[in-house]
Image 1 (cartoon, rainbow, N blue to C red):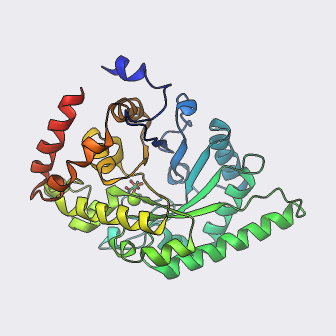
Image 2: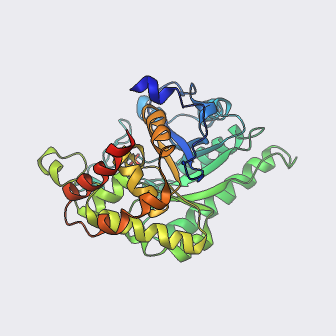
Length: 327
Ligand code: PEP
Ligand code: MG
């Protein structure tokens, strides 16, 4: 089966009815940047920067970060690379920066931590901007945004970092201004989309955390694991509304959570009108193969029934039936 998927990896991510999809990869969990499939993708949709921080016994220096990030741009020449600012805390503690909290997932994680430590944020942004010189691929993505003030403060610091780097390079006009986006993974920000669309260039839905926070289920707790399901009708209704609203605002939106890398998930999302997905390398060939076989008009007919389901199980049965016809 996998050979069958691989055989179409070099072909365009285009449905049988002619709709083009943007398929990107999630990267950063491995030490080496995985670039074997780079020419068959639209770039890196989510580069998780926390791994090199977690691997070390101290914060990586600006220079160390520049070298690391440059390798990512090198691996995807001419393509967009979405680099997420440090998303530690919660389930991703830094060994040399201990945080003790009763509710880490509701606590000091992601942007909350780095805005409280602008020196960490600024070094990282400067490193990204420097690594991007000569590539012009950088998109900066902000994790765990729950409030518009966090966006304003992040943008202010990104501007400051840009001025600092530009100054260092004597304003030779080579330091590109990056596009900036926000992760949609905390429910509150879903209700502030029009304001968000005026402030930043794009958004990316983190279905892993969004599911966890919508359902109030710890994504890593096996006791409640059976309740954690991104195909929950409530999550799907939220995603559908989000897609529609972003479309109305002409606000570029993509999906970088695991749901977009799962066959049933990507079909459901494509039925809603999403057309940009970032996923783990291992899922790319399969998802491209599948999308090449769908007719969107036919797929869209599924949506009302999917959204009317009362359980994740019902949703899966419906979408699986559609999938079985394609295999
Ligand atoms: C997400 O939350 O869906 C996501 C993509 O980010 P992470 O899994 O790194 O929290
Ligand atoms: Mg997340």
